[in-house]
Image (cartoon, rainbow, N blue to C red):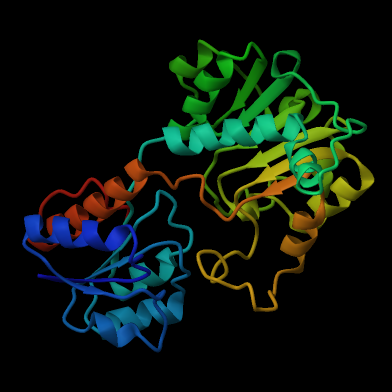
Length: 327
């Protein structure tokens, strides 16, 4: 069987793809670029296509179908970048590749600590050999209330990690867990908006929570609130966030994801003019830390998603039960 792999990174993924494909009896077509209408013909002869965070819209999904693709797997937990409605219309099945929660959970806690200790401003001054203290007075986590929105595997791990710092933890999820209740109190979103000093997002993006944090919800938050997002960029209205940072309503933010990041991250754009004004503004603020959607990026992650995405294709091709199939 043949699988076409798009966005295959030469320096870490390629050797693992070759190793696991040999174990699973697969042939691979490896492409360093994201899938598009210009390179879609690379999947000729492949019933399975393997992608990462690149947008696969209805037009591209139909192109996959026309080239004989039956199954699209993404090397990510989230799959909102794949048009599931179009996949269903085309008869294409979709799978994901969940990885362990610790990498993203660690990163979220790091962004919380960096935000409350004003690390962006500290590093900025240090780079200029400005070693003054004015304006760098931070807060201690034990004195704060942290609101965790979404207590799936990652959110639950964040709650457990935060419990060691002695802070008060509020949680919100449609499905409550007894394990989380050992460390946090489940409350409504309204209580998180009004009581949390720090809010960290760990929920998948759906039609119901698009711009979950916007002008209205920000207005109901504490003055100086800290916002951390390692989930999906569209959970936050970028314009509202920028306005709130500029007004001082939001005291700091740690963002591993932003709106409209597709086709932007994971490429070298240092000589390009970027079509994302909001990202440029957010990066300019000394109290906002922005990284390029890499909270997941650990050695464990790479090994897991490469292996499991190929196993998912193998199971689909063999007609066996597939724990990674999502539709």
